[in-house]
Image (tube, rainbow, N blue to C red):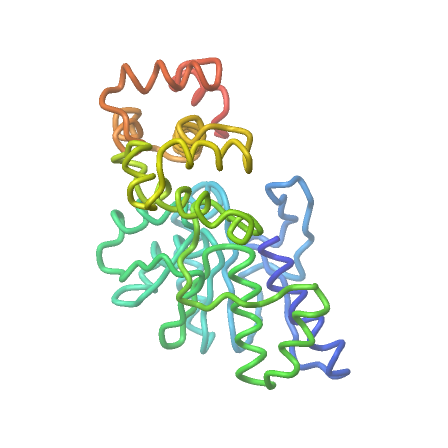
Length: 301
């Protein structure tokens, strides 16, 4: 989706304008086909070391960027990016730019799942939770949907608001998100209109993962009784707020166990558990095995 949101917005703009407003090439580091995380194979137009020029280079990456961009390839990347006036990244592409030293002193973002680790690893970057960030000649986005927003912005500022509206309409996309809109831990969608109280409670939960609030505290902040909040959760989600909150924390814990190199102790603390023993017990209840066994079984080498 990150690749499609980058390419199809440009394709649609060309189609509507009936002229080549945009041209692009897909490059891979070695010129070999790239297997996307969904299993689809993408055949690039050229390898990254070939002679190619352009106005903008966009680095699109997802899981395991260290594996797919080791140091030797990273040095090649650093040399070639100098030939481009503008630079962008999508999702984990921000990590590639940061590792190459291309985001020093700049404002930048990445996918919300990685924001804390990204901020901890790159103290010389002004990390923001925004959907996308443009700082000088560099843009960074948090993922697929924010990339769609970014390209609509580029179309709007270069070719007019009318064309941007027409491109958004092709994909039946409302395009209401601003760059500074924070990336949500949970995408609430229609729930925000259907049940503002449940949506507000979920937002509070997402903001307090490492130090969980009690359900009475959440209800009190929303000026509701605990019973009223529980009834609304049961009506809208068929689950109690306690169980939903625990599920949210455990899903985040599972992602950290599989997709990060953080210690299990750190993951326990980041997901609001008082001890590794308590965390391990709750993890096994949720997923059927201990976090250490789950990591061994599900981590891609």
